[in-house]
Image (cartoon, rainbow, N blue to C red; front, top):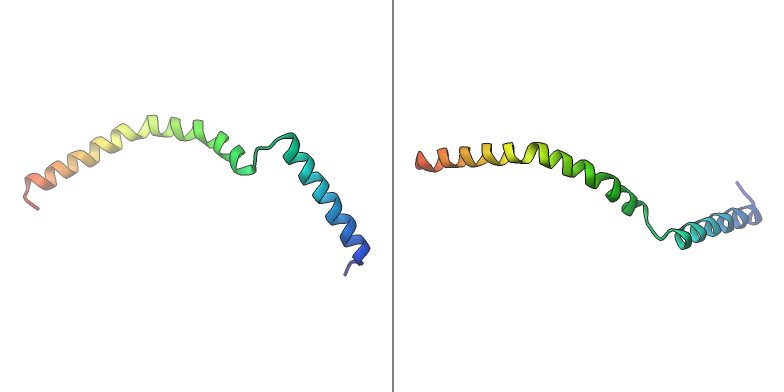
Length: 68
């Protein structure tokens, strides 16, 4: 649908953009997502993990004490 000249120009522009972004800021999208999710995950774990562990340990103790 596009001429070879147009395709080459578009590819060149995107390659230049990618090179500029990566050379100025070597962080990847994955790095940015990890950075954003880390505090949310920490908060969720702080709020939920103690109760989850307590509930699971209690259930396991009950299971073992019944001899199953």
